[in-house]
Length: 123
Image (tube, rainbow, N blue to C red; front, side, top):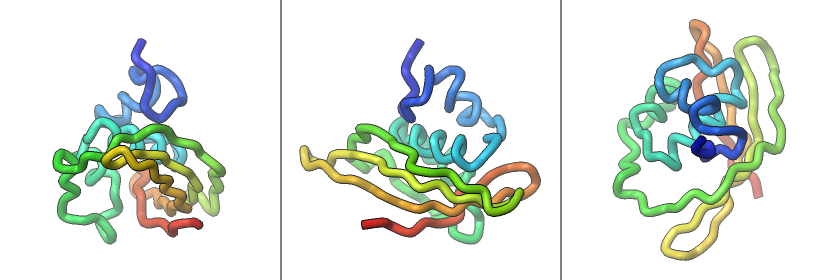
């Protein structure tokens, strides 16, 4: 069993089903699967799970030389059946230098699927 990049379980029973098209059951599962997609450089998945109103045209992950080191979910709050937030810290390195991405992300659910909307960086 290969460990899932998000740190929760083995990849086959954790993020792989979402990467293969299954709908994430909640915003936290989508957040974990999106982190794993960054690690695995699954640009198509990231774009497909990004809300159309804020989605960039492309991400160019193959040109990105960052190495993702770990994910910590700080909190997951459901505001309504269609809105939720996930606060997380993702650690990564670029050219040997360590960084932290601390974000409060907003998610929306449309037609039974969760999408990343946007986020605010935390200090």
